Image 1 (cartoon, rainbow, N blue to C red):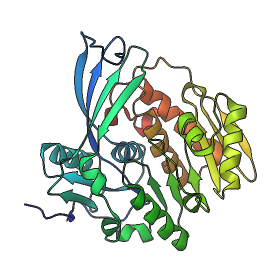
Image 2: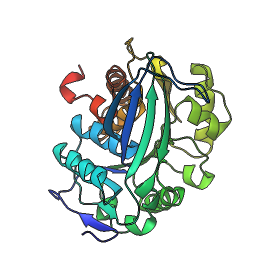
Image 3: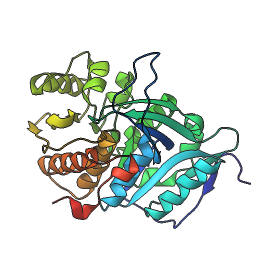
Length: 311
């Protein structure tokens, strides 16, 4: 039996991308339409996939050629064991995957309609116990080329990592999903933030409906001290802004099947491109392409494309 916070080691090596975040098992029902409150919809198909924003982004980055280390916490259950096996198969460094003996692995219930729209409910489980004491064990945090976090882990942990990396002058990317407020202290000096329209609204108060409003939201982040801003807008692509330039990248026209992990694939692809010294325009085009491919496939990690598919 593993002890709480025990490290699960597998093929220990140093890697350029450190991803700190959640791991879930996704239980998905694909149905014609999403149910209204109190409504039961029959006739759906059931799938069970590996998910969680941290894990999704790690798999996406690894499939696209990144050298990835994942920091997450799993429960001592079948879902945790399956997740760990999956990370090994994706060649992800699992040195800093922790096990919690009291809480189950995270789970998510997802419904997807024929247009690829979804609604999601998450039970965080062990993800809620990924705490600063665990981060203190992660030696890789001092050496990674770039660090990526999301908000499916405790905000106290996000804040702790942000403060530590600011002191170390490391490149931290925050994908502020699911949407919640972040303090100005976290934002000031942050290397990159990657909200979608909803998350940008929660953080800035700007309702993002087009490129103009996306740049308005980006400008607020810049004024708060964020160095670089990417606002993703689904089928409309993404916009970029920093103190020197701003531009938009359109998305390819595709028939969306499931957009569940498109944002995660975008972020995984983006950090890979940045470790390869692509320009910002090249990096966004690469990430938008990867996310567009993901949206045409069902599932979270299973939808992430491989490098050879990004032409």
